[in-house]
Length: 125
Length: 388
Image (tube, rainbow over all chains, first blue to last red; front, side):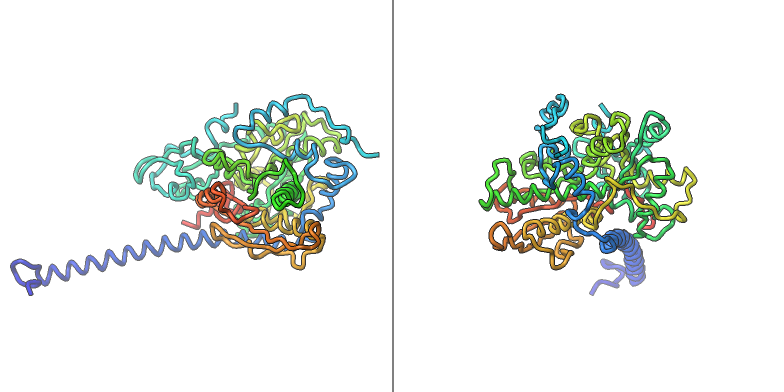
């Protein structure tokens, strides 16, 4: 056993000093880890609260399904698909749909052409 | 061309403290600089999502602002300025006024916007409902085409991906052009709003669409880039003129000296301002999926849903999946198992896309939102300094 001998190992004093420093650095690391953990926990918490608020707002709404919104029925019947509720009409495709990536330049050309409304775009008598 | 299109929305300021926290929240590795070096954003990779901005402990990352244009339009007698607000704004706008996190300020938000002078205070939630109608029908067509119930040569492939999140769209365009045919062709609610405001609403109000100026209040910085994209001109004009964030609206309300906390609740204006709970939950991860399922179930089955909520799609895990059995009226009530997946954080979408391109994806419909938790945690939301 050479640990505490004068030659080769370390002195008793050096041993205590060393372990003391290790302990202090462990405590400091722990404090920082705690601060970091708390920060991430706090950040999670506000996200959860905002999410909960959205679901509570949904629960409070009289209507909770999109197709039951009377203004949705109205915009289809009066404008997008006169006389009926029918998504994906020519008018819907033009106003409510888009294209991506390489298809965009052609879409822009198409949209810049003077638009001739289809015959059914007028109000159904 | 707008500077936002060429340079992006988000910039690291010269006073960057070089702490390197932003690189850990960036979904695409667009931020360069090591610990101790000033950081910079490479726009070629940046999605404009602003996650770095809301997470910078020193507030040294900023967004491009359209506030001046908006204020100029408000003062211009030749402009008829209308406003829309995304669902997630109403549960966070109270925070800068000292209200507890998660306070619902929907009514005060509408009241404040009216006080600021907007001619019509509408609501993006209306076009969220409209999105469900269009995107849901598109999904039904794709599913029917795939099972051979109704052949439709125009129907896109399955699975269908959602298309509301502009950061996700940009991610797909940059990194996986092959996945683009799988994306729903439906515009985001923000852009649908601009298109119907300057056609349908302008007509009904008797306002010249050329004079109508559409402002969006968004929890999102990527929406600024979206509104500038040159293809959004289907109304014959720029569909959405300017976007401000939840933070910018809060600053504007303070600057105007409005006593926000004591405002009486007001409703949105009619015509394109009413909405349902399905539209509200667009602001949460899984919300678009749940809203689509509520409507698709009732349309496909011809029956009223036994329970409105689909809790199986809720949660905060970055990738979630669920299966829903829907009795199909057109097939004599035969049930169809619809498999869905929800991704929150484009960091996690890569493997989901690889599976689709390899033909081994079990899903019919996949929702993707860039920000962890959904739009309520978007890059335009109030910054929580107490988190540091």
